[in-house]
Amino acid sequence: MTNNALLYLRVSSKEQEKEGFSLDAQEKLGHDYASRKGLIIAKIWKVSESAWREERTAFNQMIDYARHHAEIGHIIFDVTDRMTRNDFDKLKIYTLIKEHGKTIHFSRSNKIIDRNSGSEDVFMLDIEVAVAKKMSNDISRKTRMGMQEKAEQGFYPSFAPIGYKNNKVTGLLEIDPVKAPFIRRLFELMAGGSHSLAMLRDQLYQEGLRNRAEGNFGKSAIAYLLRKSIYYGPYEWNGKIYQGSHSPIISKDLFDRAQEVLNGKTKVHIQDKGFAFNNLVWCGVCGCKVIGETKKKRFHYYHCTFSKGRHDGKGYVREEKIVELIGDRVRAVTIDGQLADWLKGNLREDGRKTLELQEKRLNALKTQYEKVNSRLSRLYDSKFDNELTEEVFVTKEKEYQAQLIEIKANIDSLQRMNPHYYDDGCQTLELCKRLYPRYVTANYEEKAKLANLVASNYTLVDVNLVPKYRKPFSFIAKGLVCSDWLPGLGSNQQPSG
Image 1 (cartoon, rainbow, N blue to C red):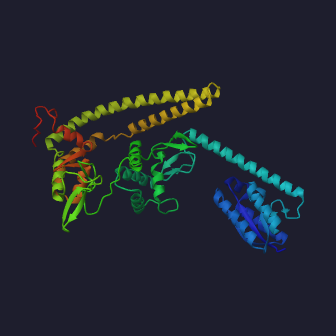
Image 2 (cartoon, rainbow, N blue to C red; image 1 turned 180 degrees about the horizontal axis):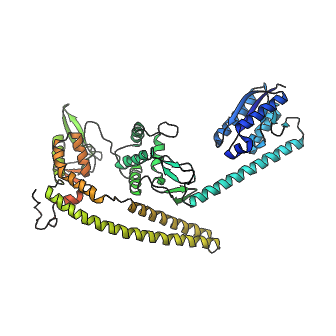
Image 3 (cartoon, rainbow, N blue to C red; image 1 turned 120 degrees about the horizontal axis):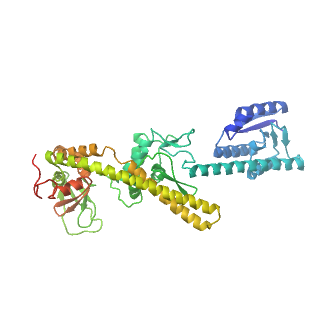
C-alpha cells in the first residue's frame, strides 16, 4: 500500500485552541506521527473555528480527493471528534475504509482503523463518535438556551445586522458610525417614494454602502434590510418579538412610511429626465399621473396618461402654464415679515405647551409600561404554578409583549421629538418669507424641488392646480384665509410689511 497520506485539521472554538487543539498543534502532531509511521503527507486541509459550512465543505473535498486518488492510502486526524461528530460523515469514512482500502489514523491516540480492524476497534470508534455527537448536541442546546436568554433580556443574540456592531463587553448592539447613516438614508429614500429597489441599490452603492463581502447588495437584500424592524427597536427571534435594548437608527414612523412604499400602498414615482414636474401633478378627473411630452421637438406640454381610459377634461397644458400655476400655490404660503414675527411669538408659547404635554404623555406611557410589564410577570408566575393552560399562556404572552413593544415605540418616539422645536420653526418661517422670490429666480429643476417641498402633489382641475400642502405649509395656507390669525385682521387682510 502506498505511504502517501492526507492530513485533516479542524478546530471549532477558542477554548479548544487553549486546550492544545489549535491548528498549529494538530499540524505538528500530525507531521510527527507521519514521520514515526513512515508516511508522506501529500495534502493538508485546515478548517478554522466557527466555520461549520466551510468545515463540511472541506471534509467533503477531502473525502472526494481520497476516493479519486488511488495513490493516497492514509488519512490522519488528530482525535475522533476532529474527524466527525455525526453518523452521516462517519459512514463516509467507513466507505473509504471498506470500499477504497484507506487507513484512518488518529495522531494523538496512535489509533489505527482499516478494513482488517477487529469488531471491538470499530465498536469503540462508534462509541467515540456517539460521545462526540452528544457533546456537540449539548453545546448546541446550551448555546440556543443562552441566546434565548439574551433575547429575553433585550440583547440581540446573533451577529449584528448591517448598521450595528456587536459590543463583546456589554453584549449590546452598538450603532456603526460608518454604516448606520446608509441604513437611515435607505429608509428615507424608500419612504420618499421616488426610488425603486434597483435605484436604491445603485445609489447607495455609489455613495459607499457595501455588503459584508465588500460588494453591492441585490434588490432582495435591500428589501430584506428595509423589512428589519430591529432598526427602530423590536426584533424577531425564534418566532417571538422582543424589544431590543439597543439604540434605534430610525424612528417607527419612518419605518412605517417605508413599509407603505415597499408593500405597494404608496406608489413609487420615478423622475423622468427632461420633465421636472412629472412626479408632482395628477389628473383631477381620473387620478392618473400627469406627464410631460415634447411637441414639435421644442414645446413641452403636460397631460394625463389616460391609464384608465380617455376622458373629457383639460387636454394639453404648456409647461410654462404649469410653472405659473405652481408659482401661485407657492406664493400662497409665502408670508411677509410682520406675520412671520407674530407667528414666532405664538410658536414660542406653543412650544412651551407642547413640552408640558409631552412630559405628561411620557410619564403616562411609562406608568402604562410598568403596569403591562407587571401583568406579564404575574402571567409567568401563573404559568410556573400551573394555573394556566399552554394555549392561554401563549395568547396572553403575545398580547402583553405586543403592548410593551407598542408602548416602548411610543416612548422612543416622544423622546426623539425635536428639542429644537422653536429654532427649527423660526427657520421654517424665514424660509416661508423667501419662498416665492426663490421660486421666481430658480430653474425648472429647482422650482420642482421647491414645489415638492411645500406640497406632496398637485391635482390638475381644468386650468387650476389644487395642492396637497405638507406641514407646516398646510397650516400657513389655512391660516392666511382665517380671520383670527392676528387681532383686527379680516379674512382678506394680511399684516403689512
